[in-house]
Image (cartoon, rainbow, N blue to C red; front, side):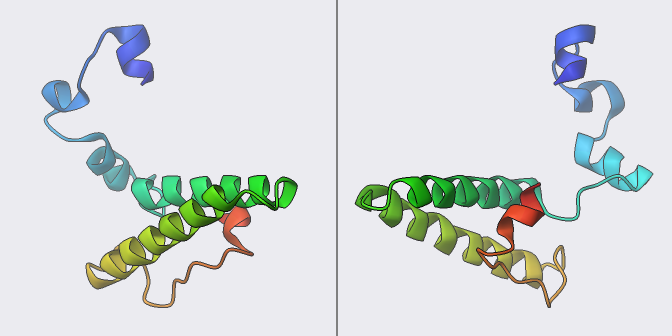
Length: 100
């Protein structure tokens, strides 16, 4: 994002020949949780905070179930391709600590 905004580079792959995530993995700076899974966990924690304030919001409750099932599906995939350790487990009580 910063390269695009300040340097005028639209895509890093065109300049370096590698994607940003591969560069970060090579330098040892890659995140331990994949980005799409991280975003889903962040969304689920925000929904839980919303439900604490608005307990009767049934639509958010339903959407939270969908998001958490998507998290479980993605986690199962990432365990299979060994991007997550086999002991990794999503728990809603500890999810806010993962996102923070």
